[in-house]
Length: 468
Image (cartoon, rainbow, N blue to C red; front, side, top):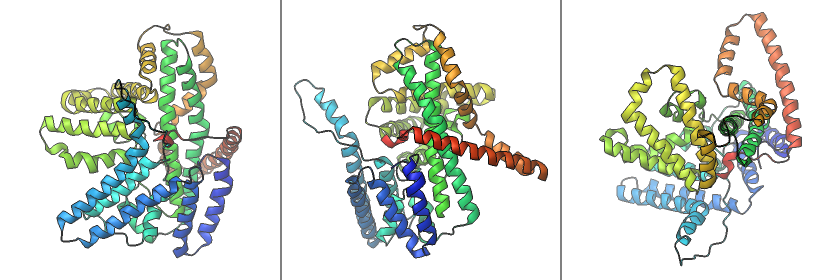
């Protein structure tokens, strides 16, 4: 089930919210758990048992670890068992075909393997349940004694499929006791709709532009760049839209999930970009991989090694394909260069130049991210950096006429303009606030109708990060 489907928007969500709000406090969690399991089982009922098994495993291991409070070796053994079980499940479903394919590339070797469907959201809920046992081992959280509460934490449908990756310690208190306030329900609903609008009105349209660019036999340099920019904006708007909707839904239910995006396309360095993009993933690797390896406390060669490990794993986390690994290595190299070679010089450059540098890096990087086939990737990149298809062509005018407005709006939405306008509105006079507030309400109503009409026309709107 997806957030941008009519069934979810007009049946599943209203039914759940009505039931959730009328039930007493103690029953709310069980309603949320039941609806979350139905939400996940809607598309892949068999993989509910995988999630149940993984959560039960970590719950039991957590209880055992808690009993060995004064036995460090036994606690570590429990942690190792938890991590091995979780990563084994992830590796089997996500990487088995990839690994077997590499082995089968050896002449004379042929290992039979049936196609294994990737459980939706497995990368996200695996990292969530792993973070619980790691934090429990570090004594940063206390053990969860109620399995159903723990299962609800892992399976909550607002963030189950594509994040943000929620850590147990950030929601532990709200799992057991939370307050639902009317103003937060309204704010959450607006945040949810804002994400839905970004997904349906902008991200989906940009996706067709990139598809046309990659399908073109001999695109001009300008068209190739337009397609790459379109995919970059599509990926940001699509993924951040899901995070907006997840955070908004959580707020409507009394939960406060951490932000996952902070206008990353407004960054002015690669390091700054990764402090703003998919924050829950980058901080997960920082806290559970980079710092345990030594972080910044080591000498330069070791720091480079630590960064290499993190970014290799970051690329691999996104998918079982070499283009994702290459994408991770690409960012690992750039972060090392910024950190140890030209970072100080970059800081002295004008902000506009730093921003252009970052946008160039990101667009090229997401082109690598988008195209799995290396030959097609190399061909597309060659059109971006050479005049094989000409510098410009008549096709660019056609696509500017059809997509120029969407591209412009997407760029504006990707920049921190709305928070600025909100602050201006809050400091404006009462008359100005009334006029602007009325215009805003009318705009929201119009956008709501347009969004619904697009949802009716498009029968299926999967989010890009569902495949990860």
